[in-house]
Image 1: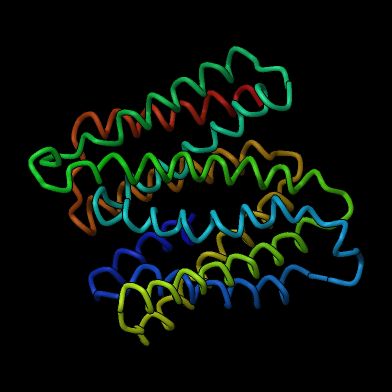
Image 2 (image 1 turned 120 degrees about the vertical axis):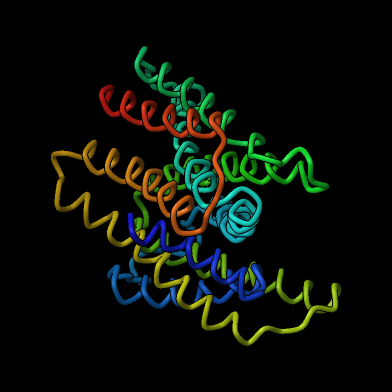
Length: 281
């Protein structure tokens, strides 16, 4: 929970110090790659390259840095609280996909939870105080919506990766981080050359700090599931509700973000939706 919200806080602080979003995101990946290799027992000798699901890997490699940019934009225009809700409520997209694409049985509780989740995101985007009066009004709903949809697709793809038996999940994660780093470098190259922006040395430090928090989020989530193997719903509930609640508290109390009554209702519905899904599981 702390690492997840810490990512948003770091992005918020980096913005205040005029650190480039894109360059910040690029330099997060070398740390994620190194940490994955040393902490997740990566072994690249136990599989053939031709057996790997490269299509899914490349799709994730493109989506991960792209969605990171939209998360940064959401934090800029809508705040940490809305950014965290958009990311957490996106979990309902893979739940919906499980029924529509993978033909899993969907219970009434799950349908209700998914419906409340979509309603929650609708109430959280585009309703910020004063948003309609600014020239950037569309950014208040567009970026959170892109984060919601993008994170949902990423979750579906990661669940697809988990089904492959020819390669371990940790090996897949390492390979995906490597691909994401090279894709992010390509973004950076074109951004510097075509847009004529300057290289930001500060972004290397901020990006590496982001990489530590980003990897910590993944590592401790996996350790939580290992520590409570018989209670995955406890981890699921604590993670999602904890992140949304702490994100709202930090956003409002520390950074002075403004939430409308509709936003607050959306946050409450998101928490209720997670609880309903947990009861189902």
